[in-house]
Amino acid sequence: MQHARDQGVTTVLVGRFTIKEKETKFVKGETIRDTIMYFIPDTVRLSGEVRYKYKYKTDTVYRDVPVVDRDETIKATLEDWNLIRDYTRTLFDNESGRLSVDFSVQYNELQRLAYSFAPIHKEVTTEKQRVFVPFVSVTSVNWDSFSAGGGFFYYDIGVRIELAAKRVNFGLLYKF
Image (cartoon, rainbow, N blue to C red):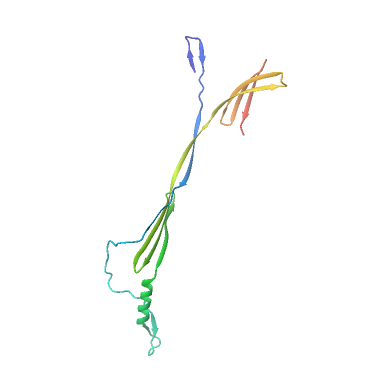
């Protein structure tokens, strides 16, 4: 409340109170995709001797002793070496986004690598809500008497004062 004593006028300043409400949501971004087809290895090491996929046959002399079938072993090893193996993995799927990789291996080499990344970013919105809401009102009873008033709401509870011709009415209000 301010007083201006020189003019003899009293001025009352009423402010509006507000509160802030935060809403957090996760927004999916645009998916990034790429495929890499031609690889040059950084390091190549000699692993030692060849590892075969052994196939066995029963011996004609000793029936209970399995013997390595040389031709079938070489054939099975070459078939395994020629196989195309496709792998699909999701590396992570969390609040940062989703990263998936697909890759193919053939001839003991990586032939193709594809990835997709769908980022998710956190979006926080702040909304101001009015806590203190003033209002004015006019009331008519049978169109022959009028009253005027006003008041305010603080959150959902309101107070009203109404001035009629010869009386003053007070009221308590609640917002649904």
